[in-house]
Image (cartoon, rainbow, N blue to C red):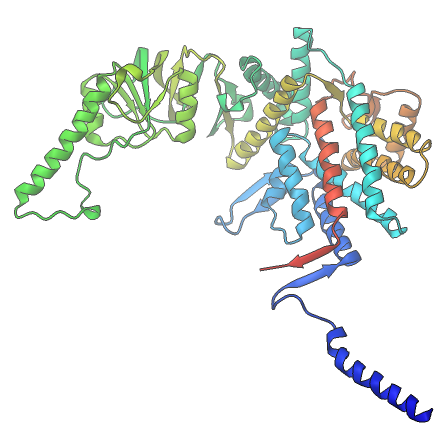
Length: 542
């Protein structure tokens, strides 16, 4: 018996010795790779996303603070802004979940143009509430399921409460003005928001239902004040100069828009290999090149145009030939300028000139050179496509003009949203508080784990009015409590008036936001949270 036990122990020792190395920790990844698993990976993602949300939180609302962005890669250039998308695009981030939050801010900026800060703040608060549920041992997939239910209910409630004035053109235009002023209230243009709101609305109304903002050109010129900015009422501006010796003013214009090299009137010695036995042979080659260019100019003139605009350079020889023929020439109109001119003048962009009968020339009543500040620009009047327009922005320095450009672009994008979907919601934190109240009430009727998730979603919605009050220097707890009570009493339009420092009827204050801004923010924030909560492994690879 003792011998059998000894033999058994010996066999177990041999098996343990054989299996020991294979049961030890195995390193799957090569040198330089790192891995974070389970709770550590999830918390790392949540902390990174919360840091991004806290970064832009102080920029939310009309009383939000600005950030100075200093670039080390572009010669230390400095920009001052409170635009969430601009701030996040400029920040160098290493945390992968934080990059997800930055991406949804970019999507919100591209799709809507406004609400870039709100979507980050909302996503951060949803993650904070989800982290508390996960700490109570609730599975992330259960939280995701509850958040989806709450999102669907929130979107349904937003659409049910939307306002539609699309049948009344006068009321619709007033809505556009109110929305533009609401958007500009948190920007550098807030002091002149009535002036710039009128500019933005006139530009969008000229589009006649189109949502193509490429037809609106914004030209920036340093000098003067912001109030000196204007919308050109009946014309289109090109930031270029007319060629030397060409007419500076032309009526009944037939315009050829081209993208063709007009710089081969001399031999490029450094790029060519030519063997000749005398200098006269070089002169013959140069003469042949000049003849080739002059023949090309003659083909262009055969189209019957009296204005030639080229995306590329126009050298001295063809420019002189155009001037001798009484044709106005404009060079280097750039890609954007060329595309926009083809749209405005209703013409084709031409690269070859052998088939004049197939070419559609652009047209306009008058082309002339005008002065804006100290710079000369080319103005096109009486264009067939009257939807296009040009906005000239003036300002004291580069920082002011750049921030004004960003602010005006946001206003144009928001107006485009209203043209696309003509539904409005009140601003000032009113829809978020309404959603919080209705979702909390709905959560009480739910059974199981999802009731906790819906209630957490409802609590997260209050972060927007809370942050608005906090950034305005108000007693946030007192203001949000008062706002909550107003909504409980049935005042659906109650919101935070940061100018008066109290809760008022936001519709009476004309603080309006397109429905698409809120629905997009709720959807994107929920999807971002869902993506981050599903993470359970982070692998740093090559």
